[in-house]
Structures are given as structure tokens and as C-alpha cells.
Length: 191
Image (cartoon, rainbow, N blue to C red; front, side, top):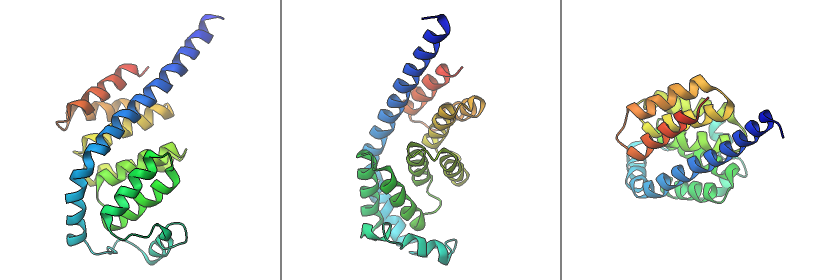
């Protein structure tokens, strides 16, 4: 085996390990965050109309199509729990549908955009993932986690400079040290 082959094999092994590490860190955050979402989603129900003005009739129809509407609950907390369960079980298509429903309740929630972006990336729809992540950043540019996810997705796509920029931002904002450490590790791994 020549040197180039060894390099690329080790790079592929590292990328797989790196992806699993990011996934593990991200999953821990979401499991811990369920209690915070419980209080947050009750405020969503009280403060936002069921169909915000920014949602068109076509989007309402799309959300009520068979497959999406069959999820049943209209309670954001229950939809959130289902989305998390779908994600944890690798049912990314169903998780994405649930996160889309949640955005109808709270279109400016950066955490929902983050979850949807990561889910879309795992579905192989990375361009859509980047779009959702950037929408979330526009809604809340101080959200440390979404910058980490944006950096991760960009690194997976080979967008090194975009990844470096997003990960650097994740190290400079917010107070979550585990996110900062993850961002620093990802930065070190970039070419």
C-alpha cells in the first residue's frame, strides 16, 4: 500500500469517527434540552397563532398532506418529542416532517432550524440543511449550537473555509463549554 492510499484510508476512518463524535455530542444536548423545550413549547402555544401570517395556504396544505398530518398531535411539545424519537431511531424523514411542523408554530426558533438542518444533512439533503441552518442563524445569530452544526455540515461537504468560519464563531459566542470544545476539535481536524 503506498503512502497516498494510507493517507486517504486514515482520512476516511477519521471522518467516520468524527461524524459519530459530533452525533454523540449533539444527541446528549438534545436529550438534556427536552426539559427546557417543555417550558419553551408551552410558551410557543400561548404566544404564537397556530398558523403564523408568514405561512402560506400552500404550506398549510402541504403540512396537512397524508404522511405529515398523520402524526396526529397538534401540541408542539408532543410533536417535538416525536421528532426527537424519530431522530434517535434513525427515521430521519419522519423527524424532518415533525421539525417542519414545529416551524409552523415557531418559525424563528433557531433550535428547531438546527435540528431540521442536521436531520436534512443525514437524509443526504445537505444543501437544504445549509439553507435551514442559515435561516436559524438569521433568526438567532448568538445560538452557539447552530454555528457548530453549520461548521460540521460544511466540513462534511468539503467547504473548509465556511466550516472554519462557523466553527470559529461557535468558539467565540455562547457559554456552553462542551460546544466550544467540540468546535475546537473540529477546527483542529480541518485541513
